[in-house]
Image (cartoon, rainbow, N blue to C red; front, side, top):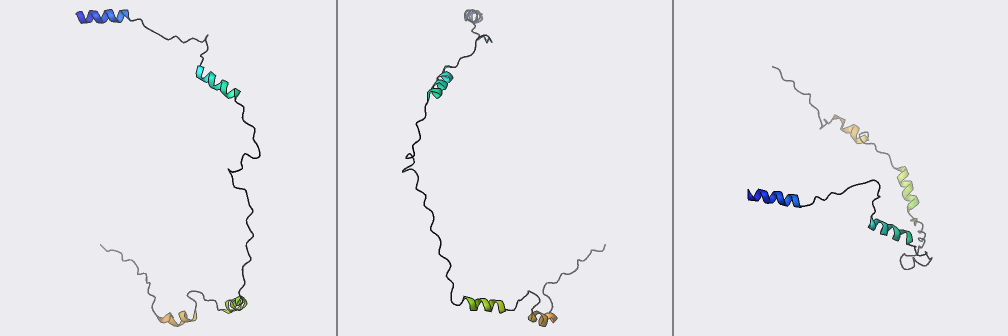
Length: 115
């Protein structure tokens, strides 16, 4: 019982602090005000044309490439290429002779199960 009476006395003697929110007084944030004041007072240093010297490589246009060298045998190689016979897969003369040989890829019909 003594412990209960001490608790009641201690609770009664502690003042209750409550924060009151009112609309009549605007909330002031000191840090925000200081930050905005410093932002408004900041003056950027003027930019000079020589500020980038040493920071960026100067631009140099690339050299023009040399034209390809034409070999002496190029015209003969071209004429040989043009004179070659076009071979189409499956239509050559050798394929016609081997037509009597059985095809190695044979699809067998599926067997159906009879019950």
